[in-house]
Amino acid sequence: MSQSHSSHTKKRKQAAKDDAATSSKKIRLDGPDASKKGKGKSRDVSSNEFRVVKATLTLSVAPVFANKPRSGVEEMLDSMIMRYIPALQGVVLSHSNLVFADTTASIKGDCPFLICKVSFDATVWSPQVGMTLAGKVNIASPDHVSLLVHRTFNVSIPRHHILTDNWEFQYGPAENDPEFGNDTPSGEDEEDEEAAPHKSDEAHGGKWVHKLTGQPLGGAEGVLSFTVIGLTVANEMLSLIGSLQEDPFSPRHVATPGVASHPSHENTGADDAEEEHAPILVEEEEEEDTFQQLGRKADEAAAKEAERQAAEEAEQKATKSRKRKSKKKEGDEADAPAPTKKQKKQKA
Image (cartoon, rainbow, N blue to C red; front, side, top):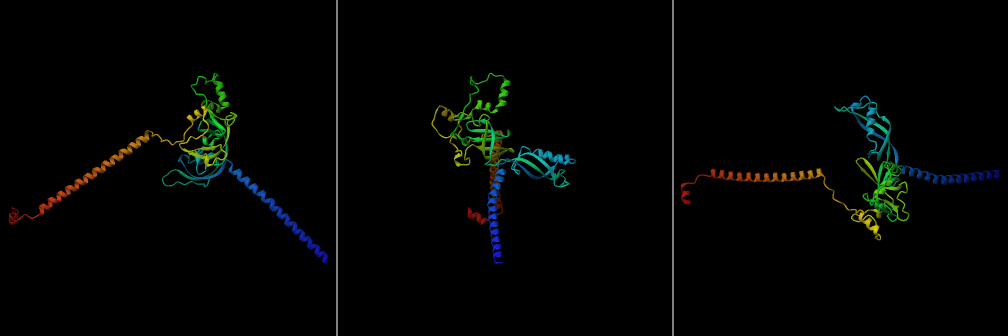
């Protein structure tokens, strides 16, 4: 009995050790795998520039769509396409799955518009600062490079975010240069521009080339990868600011006002020409347009009129005060008793 009991005890202890070892192995294996999967998912979500957002809106549908409110709502949603909507944090590209929250719409007061709440799925282009995107070179100039992302959205890369140690701007021939021109027929020119649209801009204004190899920025096809460092919204249009630097958010890449945006180096003939055309980041006063001038003149005239009215009011008050004093003096003299004969003799 004692031997069988000890053997059972040893077996249970050995089984407990095996279970503990197995459970510890499972914890070690599940831990790294789970963390890797979680990191991978978050990285995929953050790097995706396109998102589908579930949006809810309260709209006022015109009475002309009283018999077909869905058409009115769809027309209003169509007006949001290709516009930057702050609530959705992106540019609306399409909408789908339109659903009315209620089966009835309300009309408040004398307003004939139908007030209804709807929900829909909006596909938005929502780039974030820090993302790496790709665009095609559209315009090249000494102070910046312009790109087109998805052939639609504008991107500007300032000069101080270009690797000027490796790249330099090469000016193209002037339009009035007698050597500038092409004897090929117009049809062939159009075909060449369609084949390589960025070459025409480079031929007129110039291009950024590598200092050693002479290759244009973006390669033969003009496709360039950049890091998003800023977003600009104007007139409900979204444009990006990009950088080609390895550390785009470093303070070293901030342009200093009043200083040329390219680094100093040994001056050569080409460098002197480049310095002449290189931009200097100086804040210039904005010129007033006609409406601003008219508004300023109207303000000046209003100020002068206010000063004149204040002066007239002050003069009127002074005049009234003098008249009041003179009347009071005359009244006092009239109310005074007539002098007696004795007082007249004393005065004489």
